[in-house]
Image (cartoon, rainbow, N blue to C red):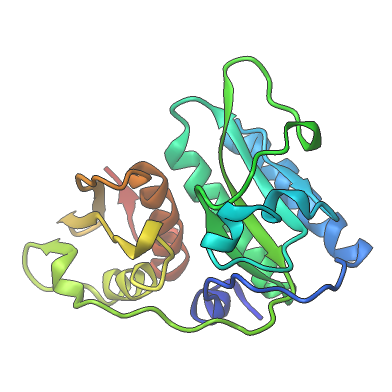
Length: 222
């Protein structure tokens, strides 16, 4: 499965099988985590065989079950967009490895003895990982016109990017973002105001989807 295929196949999954991750998959995830941390200046950590974070009332409220593996999305304060961008890079890698996932902002209980948070850092959220009881379902697709500004004809690469953006996960599926084609090869992506929060994190997620589908050789970010 390619990354572009993973964008289409990925759906948020909240119920998981009691099946441990293979050593080869753990190693591959940790390799990619190390790269993301280096480039993104983050401190993401993989936690495995740890069911306590999703054993309480918050997890039941969020309809989670069987979660014992997750990514602790740790980074400096204000790193929300980078957390979203590199977190989704890991989500799509996990999908290509046969795993399912779900971004989780609130429906879990912090387990500070399972990961390291340095001075100036915070746990922004976690991403549940594992073998899903199902493959999830596609969320409702809104019209692309609600999210774009194009001055003139929309290039095919821009449309491909936006098709992938609309498949991206966002907090409570709020999709509070806007993409503008500033000129032939310049794109501006903005987070819109949201009462829910996570707008900057969502922006990082959708920008990663856009890059994969549009092709970084076709444009530059403003």
